[in-house]
Length: 296
Image (cartoon, rainbow, N blue to C red):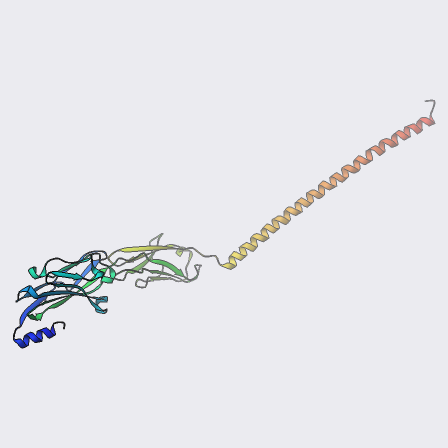
């Protein structure tokens, strides 16, 4: 489309030469932060003094907006800021007829269509543009584990697991850490596992592993039986009643001890008061007896 007008003009003048652009791989995979090589060669029937090479990028595998990322003409190469320091042309295309480029530090948002277009006046006829799809593979990011539902015997509990990043989209597997078994119904694409009527043998720690062929990541969650508010309140009330009963028992015992001690003290005082009175009475009787019997 970009060279249609030039082609029509040259065709009218009877000057039509041929150019052919070749890209050997129509699809390329590269891991995140890796380097991708996008091969593009061409043949031409005319000298390359008017050679123009352009590379275009359309993000989101062709559904996004196309933008020019490289422009070459007369030995000068211009690269847009977003790709500067990462993109480079590997040779002088006017000499080698090779417009291959490399891109370092590939990121997930670099996934898309890369098009190589070569124009070499008066070579207009032929195939002057080819496209390669680049898929940036990203291992799953650390997933987030959570659960929904009351963790109590007889209840349904649903475990969820999700990674924010990962290309291709990861699959998820839930296992019981202690025995490595699957304890519920899983959806490996959504990352969920439903445990119906959870029982004592199903409590414990669970691990979710996210995997997509590029790498793996995991998270764990502990399913320990929860104690509801009613049980907690009952336990608190029971503890308070128990403490109250103990306090009352201590008070009763203390009161009885004090009472018994008081009774003993009172009795001892009474006994002490009665002893002198008896002694006085005996002396008085002796004196009276002496009066009655003076001769003795």
